[in-house]
Image 1 (spheres, rainbow, N blue to C red):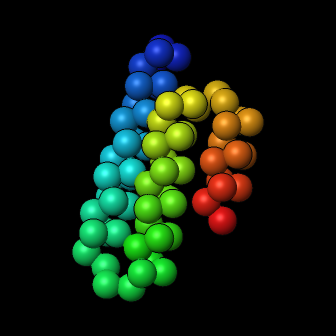
Image 2 (tube, rainbow, N blue to C red):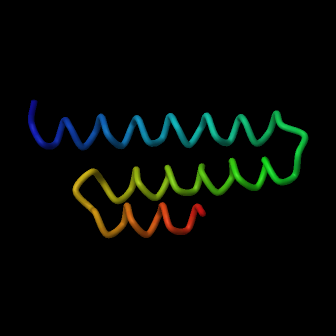
Length: 66
């Protein structure tokens, strides 16, 4: 598998997880959980954009999700 194909698969998986988190935020009643799922959705979105080789972006995205 080429590096480009791997990057595309990585991005698609991150976007799928972002969508899952947004759906969870929509369906849950707890404001705290809604905020958590929205933060996680933003994290997955940032990871999708940064790509699998961007360790700095990954660390930053995870730190902002906490």
